[in-house]
Image (tube, rainbow over all chains, first blue to last red):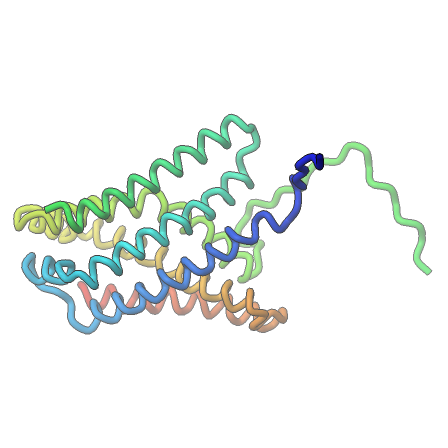
Length: 117
Length: 132
């Protein structure tokens, strides 16, 4: 029987994260450009217009896609920062868990804002 | 022929230069990309979600958020937050282009770094002019 051996330091373990961080960046950049263009050309006035923007299904799904991309993008980015500056394993694990919980909370909160009323 | 390399001293002091003014433009773009990313994760995104929650919840909530942004200090903070987002956006696009080996030479990397700062400032000014 061949024992399962995993190379713990192979650089290729980060490739998926690296690529996804860039793909999510492109998704967020496209959303940002469209949103920015819309808001700069015709800024909404008042509550009714503001609410109307986020009432369409396309806009809600696009916003959720943005927040979901943000979740993954920020997870990788914050992990990079934590790995660079926090030394002790216990501190690092605590910080990364806190980041993970916070990001999932952002996602749920965004969904509640868009659909919860 | 060069001389044999001098052996590394056994005890040497690690060198830290935390003065940002000593960094070249590409280095500044990079560190501000990191700092703005950290600030966007916390506290900017949760704060914006909080504003969205209020502003989309009811007319009263919308008026409250609107009222907060009337304050000059709040406008200044909003501009700073917008700059952080704009910088992260432009610097991120620059990094994506570098990943594609676009503008990788030293001179090009330097000009694109300066362009990131210029675009970030211009976009922030545009938004400030449009909304104030």
